[in-house]
Amino acid sequence: MVLAYLLPGAGHFFLGRRAKAAVFFVIVMLMFVLGLALHGKLYTYEQGRPLTLFAMLGSMGAGIPYFVTRLLIPFRDYMSITYEYGTVFTLTAGLMNLLLVLDAFDIAEGRRR
Image (tube, rainbow, N blue to C red; front, side):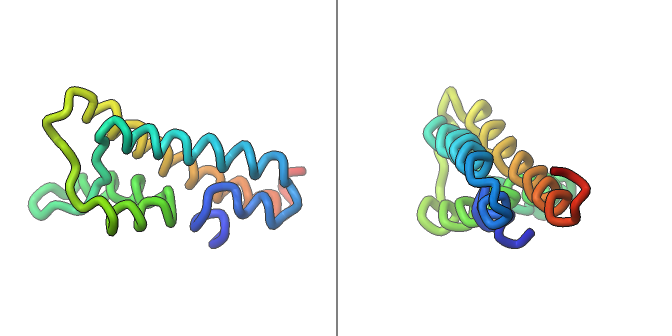
């Protein structure tokens, strides 16, 4: 599960599902990078706005790409016309990776083939 969280598709790769791992990696990373290209926001917790905690956890679901991007690109252009679309793409990439973590767990436990 840790591998699946840190790098999209890594959990499936470890479990021998190489084709699925490659597809999952490409899908999640493409959505994440597209979101960044559209000037999307990577959520962080904002004092006085408690619901940003859930958005932050969703964005963090992308794993290492989230943390690397937070370090390398500290400021996003919030005035961009595509800002909201980009934010949805980055958030969706994180949430999708969290679902892939659960899928890898189910495969490892023998609940799925």
